[in-house]
Image (cartoon, rainbow, N blue to C red; front, side, top):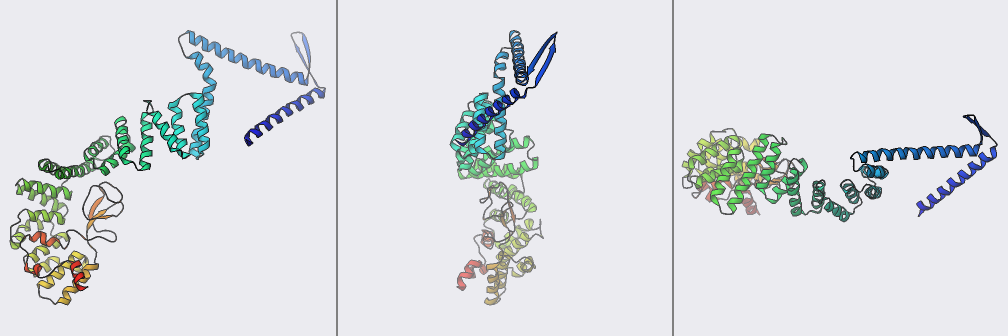
Length: 479
């Protein structure tokens, strides 16, 4: 309303100004003398102004006629759209100007102005392939998601804008948390433009979160072929995905396929601990203990881990503690100075009731890196060597509040998980879990002090039967 009143006031002011100017020219008494072709013309100021206006109008009409004649000649020579383009030129100019103003309004955050300019551009241009995107973006900025979705759906009908429309709907569904629909849209967008990095990353993330490991492997392969990721990174991540495929197959009780997938994952990335453990179990199920041993030895040499030791122990479940200690020498000799090797040797010695050997195996770990597992083993050694209950309880009391040692930690968000997984439970990062000590805090290890019964098997040593070496049990006893 206010803008309409302002326009009326401006029009009246312009009319009044022109009237006042014409009156002044008429009353000035000045004259203009023009001599041409032997003729003399004397014009007053107002007459001269009118003549100039008429000349300008005539020239404008002449230029328009010349332009139309040129367009007609082009039409005659075969340009079928020449005349229509001539008449639409003014509309196109206004439409493109409105389109440019709308884009600038989007960039500056003026949603209402962007909406009005988008409507104006659509009215003049009649080019939905150009104006629909501006309309959808303006509607989103204005908070009208329903209007934006309608425009995006209209864009699906045009092959030129189909990919853009799918991306717009995908962004909306991700914002709404509708991951199932978003996954389907991402798959369609990937089929239309498999080289688009953003679509690749979005689809890969949705597939890993939903457990579509085969589809994620296809996307990962496409990223590698296009140079988005190095070959070594692709090899490692593909092994992670292959491992998850093996776990899924294993859950479906298809053991043959599971074994093959686990072995393939281990061959792709031998240092991937879960893949090595699963591949060794697969070989053991086939009765191929030699291949299982080779896999575990290679993985242990790359990175010692309690899971590898557990599988290595399960290869011969009926052996005595002394026989197991002798068989483990091949594994222990690969990384003798590694902390995990020292802890494993100490556990094996405790199982064999070789408490002095267990103390020698631990060395000064209780002082340099006093974790709950190390201190618990020291309590078992002290009990085995006949120390008093106060000494044993002292070690166990320290173990209760000690750091938990190495765990599966996310390198992205520092989240700690009890078991390895391809995706972080907290931040959703893919292949971000590494076996290391957390920066702060921790959760009890599933294979810390409880590792001893796993290695010992059915035949437990007397020292273990005499008391419970877990810190939690000691704490409950003290209460």
